[in-house]
Length: 111
Ligand code: 2BA
Image (cartoon, rainbow, N blue to C red; front, side, top):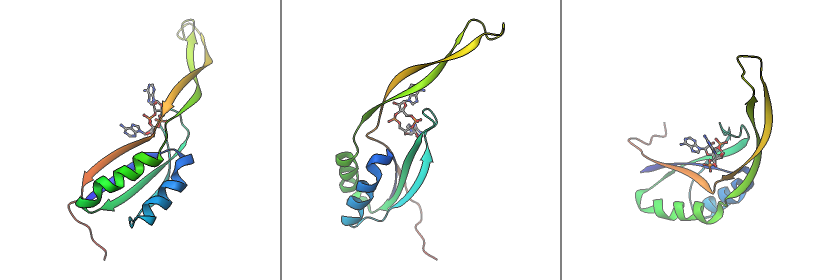
């Protein structure tokens, strides 16, 4: 058995959960926050049988779209040691489709 950990954009999460459930997968949805953008995203965890892994990954790949986001970063103007200020400026990043980790499951228990 494998554990899929998939970090996806909030916009894709509802459709992805539905599609996985419709195909017989069990899913847990967690509200998470990306470290870089400091914006909300969604992490799904799903335990799948080995022979169903490619099926699940295919569904994730099909549904999760990449999108551009603009975020404010900050660069120092002048030396911060000398009291310089941080001025935000926009940067463009491409987020997603999905960031996926596949882990080997050593035990799966329901007790
Ligand atoms: P965030 O950390 O908020 O990152 C959002 C997007 O910002 C990333 O999209 C990437 O395009 C960009 N980005 C991230 N770190 C950057 C950096 N140091 N310099 C420049 N650009 C940077 P994705 O790569 O699609 O990642 C989407 C979300 O997936 C991330 O949100 C984070 O929550 C998660 N993630 C990605 N890689 C991860 C990893 N190796 N471990 C844990 N979580 C990860």
